[in-house]
Length: 113
Length: 112
Image 1: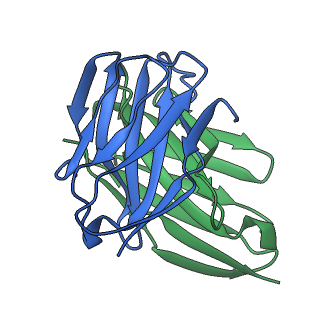
Image 2: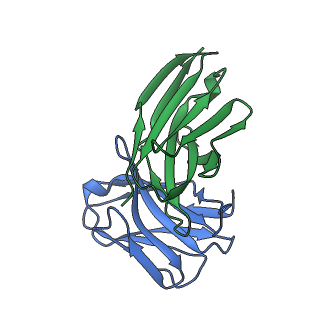
């Protein structure tokens, strides 16, 4: 599972600051996703990308920006962090077809103070 | 869009007992149903999946059943062990769309 990596693992930032979470995969998977996980809410989709330069909103996109200039990278930016964005963020990737190998990264725990 | 309901939210069993987690989905076009296990502080990992053309699938102590008519699927864990303690997520997706909708998760606690 080392094929998808997230950085940093932990991040503390102040309200109003911009912060970028990184996600990198080595499988050349078409699809990449960002989720946030909060107690009682399960996994909520923030944004996803079907290919380089193609991104779309998920369930909770407000306050977040994504880009995908290269297939292997899918960074998530919080333009002006708020305390409500304190969460654990998971990146995931998948190929196409039935055995699409949907795999999660190890997560980033973000705290906004 | 698809809606996946998962029950119960918490399940407590004694070691050796069986555990069953149930999910219902709303979109009859969904045809792929994976289950993920997330241990404390770790990432969710796929443990078993089932496609809509199959009614049941087993892998050692875990099994998944699917009832397309009722639009529900279940995870069965037999002979539970303390290491089965984790949060389990079900999901549903449609062929041609690789964006699964997740249930809210079930926290399984296995008491030794």
